[in-house]
Length: 123
Image 1 (cartoon, rainbow, N blue to C red):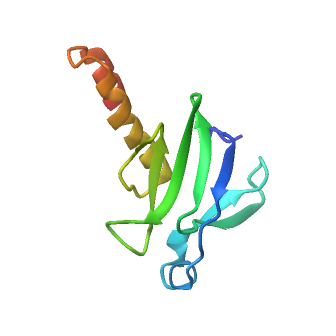
Image 2 (cartoon, rainbow, N blue to C red; image 1 turned 90 degrees about the vertical axis):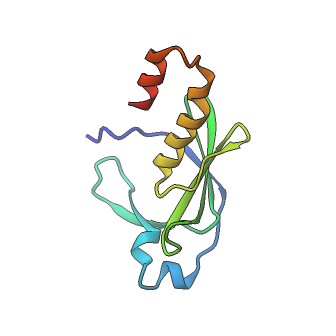
């Protein structure tokens, strides 16, 4: 059984398919294999559509992930996380965008003198 965390996500905006990105030389960057059943025996390819938005709830907070062009490589998708009216930088993976949001927006809430909390969230 997969140890991957499962959560409910909601498609907010469908986004766009661009033939030069989704069907060209760099198509593999824009499609993600997704298991349809829990045993991972049926796999489907789902596109990262440009400007699509997906909402997921983690730790009682709504995170919205938006697919944009990656600012380091325009042929790959980039991901921006928005939560509580604050956005992350453009990252290469959705999980990195959520994690970078957490590092930037949660750590500053703690007292800088409290080394325990700073080390806990950085490492």
